[in-house]
Length: 472
Image (cartoon, rainbow, N blue to C red; front, side, top):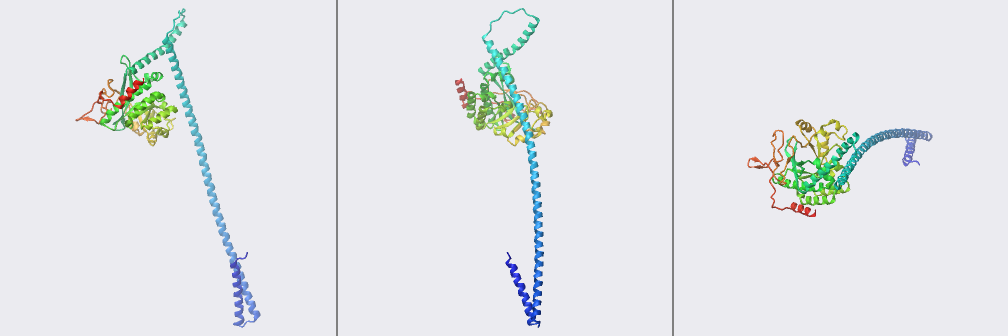
């Protein structure tokens, strides 16, 4: 369709040519034919000029179109390059995900192997208890047959194998008698800040005394006590002592806390846990300063019941600590969500480069990673100054070990009685647990012991203990 502007231009050209011919005819004295020829020549010239200008304009439009097409092609090339880059990133992520999956498979395989070892240990414990029960009813001795040399060797092996169940039965009786007679002692070992070495926490360690007042270490009686279902009573008594000690400590200083070890079996038994939960709920005001400590193996194998019980303690405001760490495979986000506030790692594990080669994270980055989720790293079992210097490079905030002070016992007659003191070098060790609050002073002299709890004053804790005894 012809555009209106083209028609207008054509009319204008005709008018111009006619005007030129009329001027030539009327003013210049040209004849009619001559004027018409001049007008026609002018019209032809105008038509040619218009055609040439339009052709040049069309060429300019084609050039701009070619330029636009070139720009579009360049944009398309850039988009193709961007898609290629994104595809390469996706491929690298898929490769990384595959390697992480392989690592997780190895981790699961290791945990399955650990579970297999635990099952074997359980089977051995059950067999030992079966032998103990069988021996409790007695057997009718048989007339021995004449021995040969081979028989004597077999008898020696049988005697050595039978010695273990007999020792287990004797240990079980000693543990049961100690629990019934409340012969449970508390040892306190300080946890200090690094590098200042200021006492910040105390870890409460339980020890039992048999009928001869010989001390049974935790490593000796925990397995037997858990198998016999006595760990719940032991843990409850230890909680009571820890709360009594903590109350006396906080009279002088609020910047001190106590770590209380809890066995996994306490979380498993609903009745025992209910008793402990009632006691801790009555003392929930001490939750910021009372840390409940569990083994790494126990925390990794929490079932639905144990997880629910742990969540109940977390709702009361109590924080948790993990000790007996054997590897550095942690999920800080999950531990932080479960209420873990401290992780104790042996100094030898943090400084052993061979063991760290298979770890998910380097020890130098562990403290920073845990700190992002509100978890403090504690280096335990420190026995030399060289280890302290090396640990400072790892940004470890707390230390514990014989270098600072060994565990010191509370007097058995009272949970908050004075702790026996021992002379230690002030340059190399923290204050002994006897001086529970290193800042408390009487006059100009530091306090040397924790004051005893008044026996005539009955608190909510005493009522809970009496109610537990009545239920038993």
